[in-house]
Picture 1 (spheres, rainbow, N blue to C red):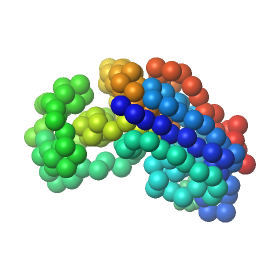
Picture 2: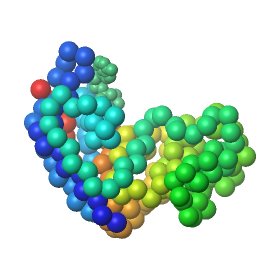
Picture 3: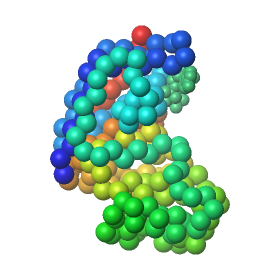
Picture 4: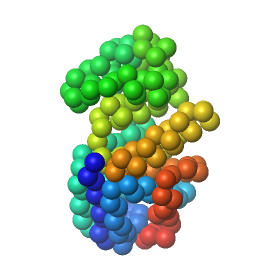
Length: 193
Ligand SMILES: Nc1ncnc2c1ncn2[C@@H]1O[C@H](COP(=O)(O)OP(=O)(O)OP(=O)(O)O)[C@@H](O)[C@H]1O
C-alpha cells in the first residue's frame, strides 16, 4: 500500500481567528501521528483541512493514496438496518471482504438494527467498519475512540497498527491517550497563532 501525506506551512483561520500557523510535517507509508491539544485549539479543523474539506488559510498539502475520514458524522443511511446501510457502500467501495470488518468490530449482532437506533459506541464501530471496508491508504481519524468501551478501543488500536504495518498512514486527532505503532505527536499548541 503506497501512502504519503505532507503538509507545508499550514495555517488555519476560522471566523476572524487564526488558530494555528507554520505547521509542516511529512508522513510516509507506515506512519502514525497523534494530533493533540485542548478543546477548540483546531484538531478537527486540521483533520478537515487534510481531508480537503476545509481550505487552509495558507500552506500546501500533498497526498498520495485515497483518504478515509472518520469523524462524528456517520455516513450511513439512518433509516436502513446496519447490514443494508453498510452493504450499500460495500458495493460502491468495491469491498471484497465485508465480513472481516463486521467480525473485527463485533457488529454481527447489530446488522438488523436500524442505524438511527445504534448507541454512540455502536455508531462509532459502524463508522470504523466502513473505513476498513474502503481499504484506503490514508486514514484521518477525528476522536476515533469517543464512545468506544475499553475492549473496542484496544481492538481499534490493533487495527491502526495493522493498517500501518501494511503501509498505510493514520493521522489521529484525540484528546485521550491512544496507542499508535509509531508514537509521533503534533502538539497543536506549539503552532498556535
Ligand atoms: N465554521 C466556523 N466558524 C468560525 N469558527 C469556527 C467554525 N468552526 C469551528 N470554529 C472554531 O474554531 C475553533 C477550533 O475548532 P475545532 O473543532 O477545530 O477544535 P478542536 O481542537 O477539534 O476541539 P475539540 O477538542 O473540542 O473537538 C473553535 O474555537 C471553534 O469554535
